[in-house]
Image (cartoon, rainbow, N blue to C red; front, side, top):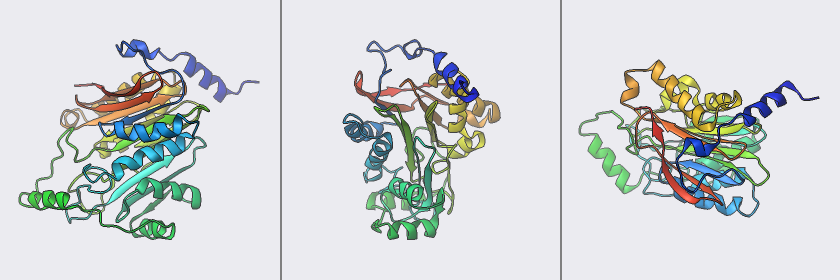
Length: 321
């Protein structure tokens, strides 16, 4: 007998709008597995690493971790990992989470001195009974797991911070990489989903500030029966609507990934009509069929898609404003 949950799943997937109707791409879009999607321009390089695993029959979880590690280790990317812009006290603190096809998940927040927080988050998932470790506890755990303690503040980021101190004006600018996250979700050859999200958070944030990036359900959510979603932008607004979980639940109700992302953004506009015109939030989603969608508050949100049909392609999401 088909369970109610299974019935809803089948109904949801059967009613998904063909993605070719949502995007006007001449080459079509992937509906076969595997496929990986990730946020922003640095998603292109992340996808390359993820695809090395997916294209050889590897697991989506391994792929998203490998992909997320690319911008984490790039000192030129000032919003993720090494070289990230610091908080107001000059400290680089990192937030990250990861989730697999079995609903296992792990996360770290306010983690210092470790280049690859996404890998620490995976260790939290696999080696502890917890989901989230923070601050000194997260660092102590990382060291016990063999991670090397390193200086994350580069000369370039330190120079930018000292320049900021002259005015100490705190006003994030939309689509400027002072608050951009890499979120990455993948569907592997066995049709299993996983996702990861990692960031150094908003530049010049208050000490101890944590955004949506390490929060399961906000920046990332994976339901292996339906799909996966991730977010980027001003994390406080994503947390208010538990954004990525909302996107997945909207897909469960029969919405395509594109429609689900659009409705999540519309929820932010409804909740914060004035503020929503000045900030950026974007959602990226992938369903069990390999169909994807993306939508943002403002123009300028880019994302990367890698599949056999498309190769590795950078795209710009549609936007509310």
